[in-house]
Image 1 (cartoon, one colour):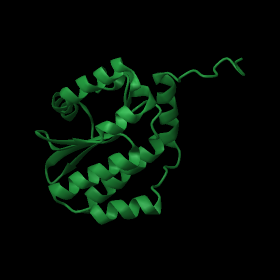
Image 2 (tube, helix red, strand yellow; image 1 turned 90 degrees about the vertical axis):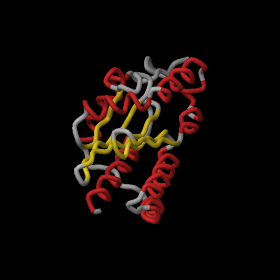
Image 3 (cartoon, one colour; image 1 turned 60 degrees about the vertical axis):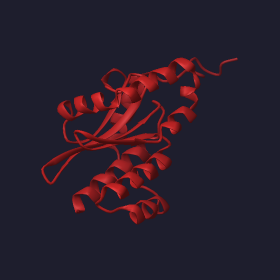
Image 4 (cartoon, one colour; image 1 turned 180 degrees about the horizontal axis):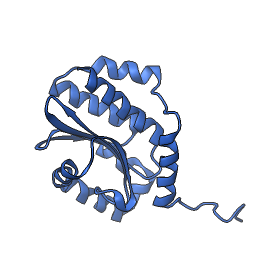
Length: 176
């Protein structure tokens, strides 16, 4: 029994793209006080605290996080969060995610050259990390150095929360 024709169907990449476009035009969601407090306690302008911040963001987002401090300085964490998602329990998708991880430095190099500064959402065929993933990404410039921070997840990721995490990160990068 199907209550309506779309019952049980997974939205397409185009549907998610339309949803995110609408979301970006609406008022943005903020992090909870608890999440802001957790991240504020970690925030410092050194590599060790940035790595810890990335781990905390991976935990909050339940996604995989990568942070390229510079074009050739990449840190990533939270890969197990991806594999814990229902979408990635199929063997072929585990293999596909593994290929992305193996190529992460190469993909980041492409992103450095092709993406504009600021927050972006990459879904489906527009996602250099793979059309089976969604990526919310921030490309920023600080002290004449370009960096890229991103959250990888399933297409049904919590875009509002993840964009709020990027906004928090961008605001704090601009303060230092």
